[in-house]
Image (cartoon, rainbow, N blue to C red; front, side):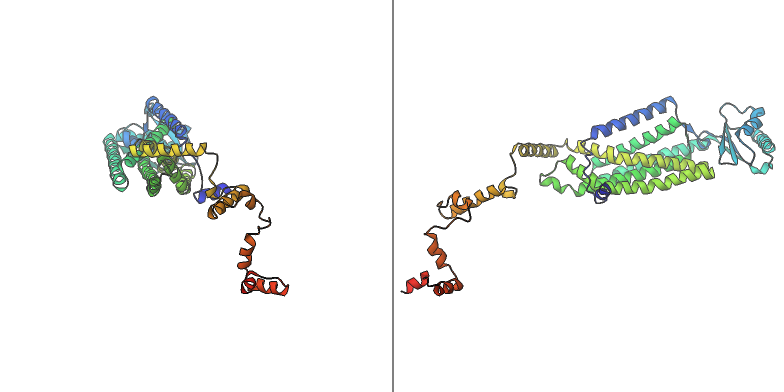
Length: 398
């Protein structure tokens, strides 16, 4: 509970920048694995990109084995895919065939499933449409990155914009690598989800950059280096980043579960899967990848390099000192007495020694008694008259 409370109030003390090498090593492993999977296995594109013909048969007692047996006489080729969609549907995908061949396959599937031909949905997509979709997706990505650089450069600074773009490239490589490693098909819904995820990841980075800029006045006082200031900013916005990630991840995971398990909708599955992977990667990269890059890059500037050197020198000097000075209120009781005696001696010309102040209950000297009597109030004088004693005032009158 204490950890959650500190997280909520932004009082965590996680050393994000100090462990930058660990985060960079994790990112390097993810990127290398993704690139190897991309080169080794490649991406599997859906029919919308490659072109082809697909059939979807919905029947209670019809499975993938029955569908493969029904299309076997047509010799559609080794690239044909037969997969279950939900509990009562089967989807068959193959290369583009002629309309007559597509109709014959529809009739064979309907007879095998025991359903009318009009319950077998058929769809044909030409490769030219897939090429147009690919070009539009690349154009949208380029425009998105360009607008992101312009906005962050104007809103913050150019180095923050480049850092944000590096974060987005990191996320794209990781997502593409996971799709290649698992052999998942890339569809237009996947492209839409990736673009949506990039917007989320960019938003998370902007939140961090805004807090960094807000804390920049701390650098003028010389109390923090740039890395320490970024570290402080990261801890302050950590609760917001975690809350945003969780509230974004849960609906996407629910959509993935609903689309793949209960409804068997491939479009929902493609969309939600890319969102789940992208949100996880974007959360990691905005916290553990972008911010350390920004901190190390900015500290290469002369002013921040000088500030870091001064802060390091002050820290070393403080480490060599025996302890805090008495003026800061951290002295012991004996030291306080010595300090008080020294100040008293200075005020009285140095005549009061440390032995006098060491015992506050000691008897006063004869020279100090007249002074005390002179300063006595009316009540003290009345008590003196009552007991037959003479005060300094009465002696003066006589």
